[in-house]
Amino acid sequence: MNKILLIAISFIVGSYSCEKENLTEEKKYYDSEIFLDQNRSIYGKWNLKENSGGIIGTGKQIDADVDLEIEKFGRYRLFHDKALSEFGRISILIQRTDSLVILFEPDDEMTFSFFDKVEKTVIIEGPDLWLTDPCCDLFQYHFRKRE
Image (cartoon, rainbow, N blue to C red; front, side, top):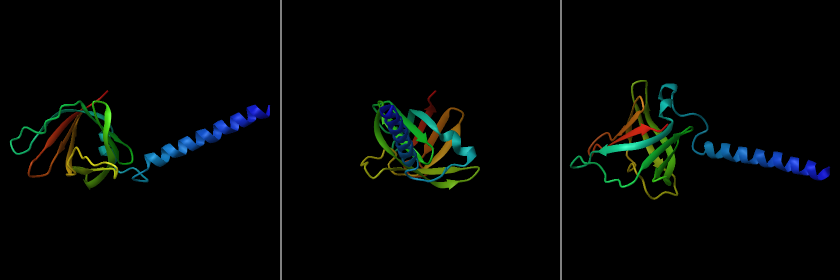
């Protein structure tokens, strides 16, 4: 009987510890939600369909299937061929009812930045997400929401 009680207590304590650890990780960058209600459609998994821009307008050469996952509390993860290649926080530079400008900031562990650490203007139209550089090279990334 004592063994069963000890196992049950261990299980409950272990479950609580895992739950607390996940909550801590979820709130790694921010303690509360960063997006206004009207901008929360940005959450989810997005697949890169095309990109354009740069000096000659052809965009970046990307030889991989690229997925962007945007999560609550300002977290993002980027995958190349289903392998995690970048993760970090999203900083909001402008957030109004008519515009949203964000910055993807790779975690300190990351040496690579897919979005070149340049702010992005966000446009969401139905299942499509457009991320556009504000000036100069004007790179634009077109993502489609995954089901």
